[in-house]
Length: 208
Image (cartoon, rainbow, N blue to C red; front, side, top):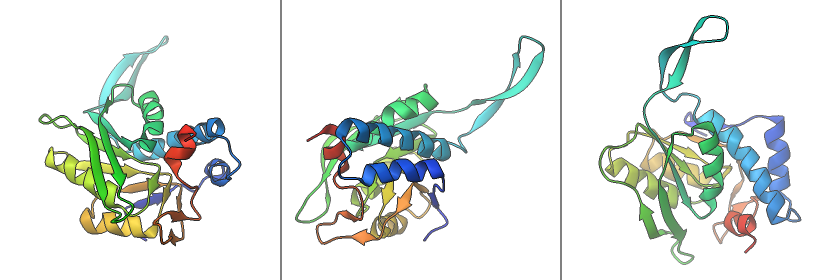
């Protein structure tokens, strides 16, 4: 598909992803499975964050090590992307959390803004765009555009499921943005939902 797409090949990923797809999975369990996948995805997406050498004192002797260097911003696309926030802060406690509210116009399939909290000036070193579903790619592409306007060069996309159409759209707009996901599904249907997918992630996460 693309050299910039990483699909996690992991037995635990497959287990939790199958539970997410199951229409009988209740909202509380759906959130739990999604958070487990978020940890695994974010572990991979943050694998190459910049680090700096440090020296620490263990109880026995001096040891060389590495600490994270630079600033990281998490950018969840509301509302479904919020489920990634706690797992990321567990991995990178010093990360900043920016919020971007967009929904897809059902007639045009284009992203519509309704909330934006993206600070201007002094950009972080890395931004992680967080959205469980990369469907048409419209919201993802717009999020990357807004972050690039704020001077962020290293932007990474993190989704649980991606559609080929969404990957192609993002690649056409921003060919250098890597995508991290658990599965690339077959296609979008005529309503632009991912198939086989897992339904509306936001509705299933929040029981609406």
